[in-house]
Image (cartoon, rainbow, N blue to C red; front, top):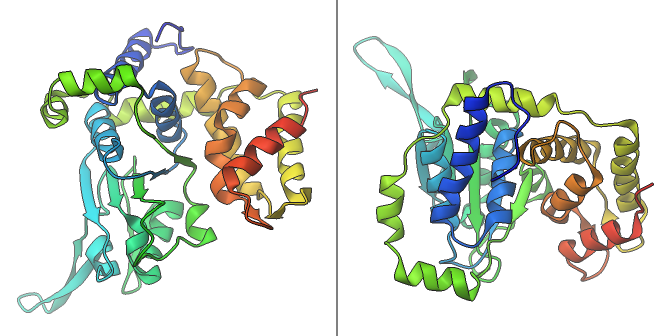
Length: 313
């Protein structure tokens, strides 16, 4: 990454560039998606990876955890998975005559919720409080999740047998939804002729620690968004609510998420201010899974239509 990142700490700037390069060496041929994942993490959001098996969703999650020195837990979501399997359970201890809380895998830095739509709605909802409030409540007791806390969830959009589609309230908790798709010919050849991905993941070294990630989040929040930029963002929100083919448009919370992600994208692009191009680069990944079509049109198409119809003044 050649751009100069507007950070006072030049060493942190260099480490961020090295972090992006490291992940791109493992997830080949997907620099745009990798940058989107970095923007989501720096903005404090959560990421939904929706794609067919075998294209690198789990590899991306592992690479992000290793690169940012995040404790990593993977939970395979199945129909018999219980909420307590994720958030933990209180167990009565005879020695103390008290209940003691045993934390579940959600108490980590990066939680990979694999095939999240195969779990029941009750289990899916166990993530809602954690993703929104960074805490869980068990038996009336609230337990805080130590930041940073980043959820990466995966689902297969084609194999829908035995699945429970995520409700709007759950989808809205994911800042971005990405599809890695198949690699191009050059990237696939490098993948076939290179080292095993598991060996590469094992050799990854932390480039950014939790304290530095917090600093990046603060820097992103300080990125300037002009009144004209906010006018453009609001125009997109309003257009989504008035569009004839959209039943449910973008909420104010979606607008805040778009602004936060755009600030992180501007930071990664080496600028101290947000441009309309930042909004456009993120808009489909942020808006498509939040839009509810009136007819059969998919969210990605509707998001692109909004970008085409709303002019930048």
